[in-house]
Image (cartoon, rainbow, N blue to C red; front, side):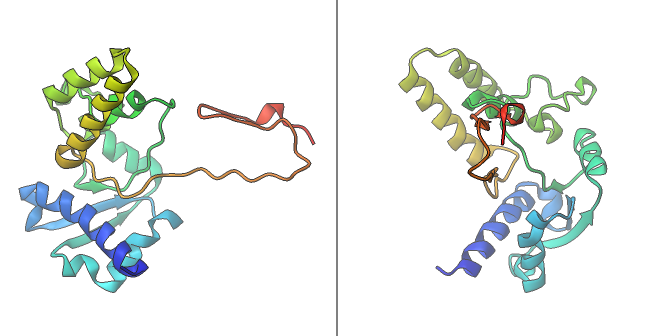
Length: 192
C-alpha cells in the first residue's frame, strides 16, 4: 500500500468511525473543530483530494483559536474535535483515567477534565475494570487488563485515535546535563 492510500484510509476511517457511530451526524454535515496547525495538514490534504466525499462524509472545517476549541470541548458543544493529548505520567492509568473513565455523565457534574465526559460517554464496565487495573499488583495481570481496556475502547469508545504524538528534542553535543525522562524534561539542569 502506498503512502497516500495509507493516509487516506487512516483519515477517512477515523472520521467515518465517528460520523457513523452517531446516527444524528451520519446524514448531516460533520463539523470538525480544529486549531489549524501544521499537524492538521493530513485533514486538509484529504479534503482537497476528495477522500471524505468518497467515504460519504460531508465535512465542514471550523478553524478556531485553541481557547475557543477547548471551550467548546469543555462545554460539550461539538460534533468532532481534532485535539492532541499527552499522558501526564508514564503509566497506562494516566490515559485510561481520562479517556475511558467517566464517574458522572450528568451535564451538571461539569467533569470537563475527562475527555470521556466531554463526549457524553460513560461505560460502567470501563469504570470498574479501570479501577481494578489501577490497583492490580501482579504486573502481567495488570498489563492484560489494560490491553482489554485498550481493545474495548478502540471498538466502543467515543474517540478515534488517528496518530501518536511524539516529542522530538534536539540539542547540541556541547549541552550537558539536559535530563529527559518519561515524566519530565529538566531544562534547568542544562549547562553549556
